[in-house]
Image 1 (tube, rainbow, N blue to C red):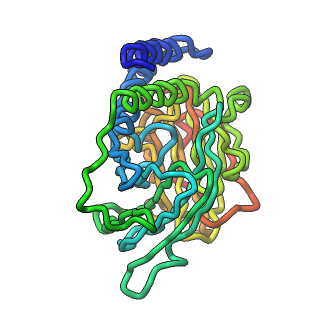
Image 2: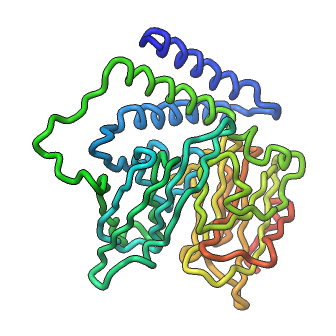
Amino acid sequence: MAMEESWGALSGAIDFAIERVRADPDHLNEREIADGHQYVIRALTAVFDATLMLFDPERPSFLPMLESVRYIGAAGPDIDYDVAIVTPGIAHRITGARGDASYVGITVYGHAGDAGASAILDSVDVDDLVASDGSFEFAFEHPEAARVIIRQYFHDRTTQARGHWSIERVAETSQHGEARHLPTEVELAYRLANATQSLRWSAQLNQMWSPERRATPNEFIRQSADDVVAAIPNPDVSYAFSWWRLGAGEALVIDLVPPSTRYWALQICDRWFQCFPDRRSNLNDRQVAREPDGSVRFVLAERDPGMSNWVETSGHELGVMFFRWLHADPEVLPTCRVVSIDETHEP
């Protein structure tokens, strides 16, 4: 595909993404329209970041997917994602230092399918590998391997240091004297084609990730990594998922008895699976206030109702929300009830 064709296809994908915002089947208020267009901009930034990723098959490297993508595609604000493109059928080795994150996990994925899903080929909790000095090594080889993601979960970014790591091809670790591979026009056209596909996928995520649940909001269902077929899930995590919907002056009360695990969190997103950390859209298990019996109550509302565990709708009327449970799968799911915002108070 020539560069001109690739740019034309990408331009068409931008138009498609904007139209998906405008054509959402539910009413959009002014705040939602603005944030919907912001989602398109964020998605564009993400696909361009990936397009500029250093892709030298002889020298794979990690790209930190930070603010530009952390807040879209249901990515968690507590989570850092480092992504490397790898060559199928070649042995690779990752070495590094774990850092202070509450959790560090490595997952190897295959190529995405038509629905955007990527097969999980291998995974490990780095705590199963780490040595006494905090270092670790992980090797993998798979005929369908396409990329590897290292996730770090943080309870408090101000006190926990990120880990650091590198990736190399096992049989070819000494390449320093050879010229670095530079992309050709054909390869850049291919990257733009991938960006086009990724943007179209992002624009349709809310039509692929449990869209049938939009008709029955405010009711959690259980989802495993195998159930989340529209995204790139973490196999070490199980999820409780729901769409949420509130009218004017309403609030959603969410009650749960949390499982025993070293990390869990509630995250809310808008209808495009975009979150807003500056608008109080995520609370983890160390940030919440608990009841005397250990249970936790959240209140989802547009304004602060005076509750410790308030999560903000940011002026939206509709969105999605989910709990992440690390190495846990609670028997009883969180419950929801809609009340007047004036009825919410600390018990």
